[in-house]
Length: 150
Image (tube, rainbow, N blue to C red; front, side, top):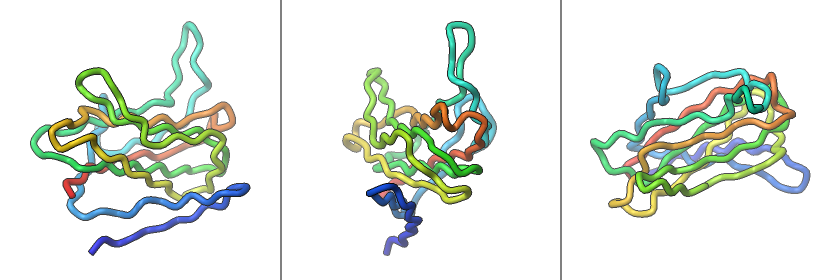
């Protein structure tokens, strides 16, 4: 049986409900970092000379076949955020499975979304999590991704 966790966030005319928490999941490692989650203070947007820190990649292990990935973003500040989540494939294609602009999030209320793979034979190599937006500059977020086999 699948347990459901539902944190409902009121938006102007819509509701966002986090995805179910699935059994048989493992946390993915952060690319270029240590551990399976990252906490970051969002930097100003990039310029020709500087880059922002709005993208975070997680590596997908090749020792198992995943059917879905669960992205969890937990804001440490209330505010408006832009969220885009992608499955990145070895052929340089990607599938965006979640996209919201100016999404009002509450402090310490996680948002979870599930991305499903194209097929068991077509596995992504990375999961990209974009969290940013000009109104979110200076805010802190925690980001984690789980890969699930069922």
